[in-house]
Length: 172
Image 1 (tube, rainbow, N blue to C red):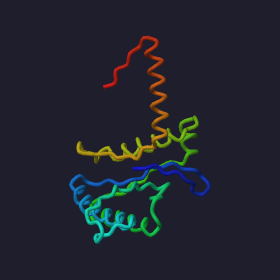
Image 2 (spheres, one colour; image 1 turned 180 degrees about the horizontal axis):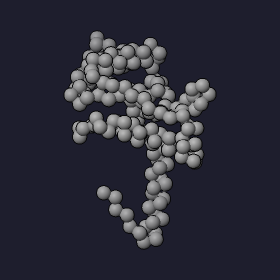
Image 3 (cartoon, rainbow, N blue to C red; image 1 turned 135 degrees about the vertical axis):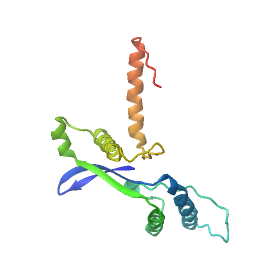
Image 4 (cartoon, rainbow, N blue to C red; image 1 turned 135 degrees about the horizontal axis):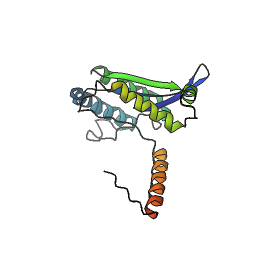
């Protein structure tokens, strides 16, 4: 899952997109994707089977707004081709759910911030999947570390204020 922001016909939108991979297909995907990905990354780093067959490289993060910045375009296309080739061999489903930003402001009578819009998209996504989600479900979402730091700082500040007034909170 990842967020997406942009414009369509001059109207700003916020959306989340991702794919659902059935549990029983995960090992099939991994066994096909990661060994081939390692070979692509190895070649991009100048390592060939002739000079080091045992090299294992970290899997690169595939993020749309900064798509594989450490690689040339040819390598980026090889990685994306591989990803979609391996996903097409499974029963995965792609999803995209979003809202026009101005429609949210009108519907809820206040200005929605970026984090609010993304949270609404993610919650709506879960409501959409609700009937189909079993107990064995894993939700992976790429986290914006800076936003997360700010959120935890705000929570920490609030807890500090509550603690100083004698109120204790236990989160379980």
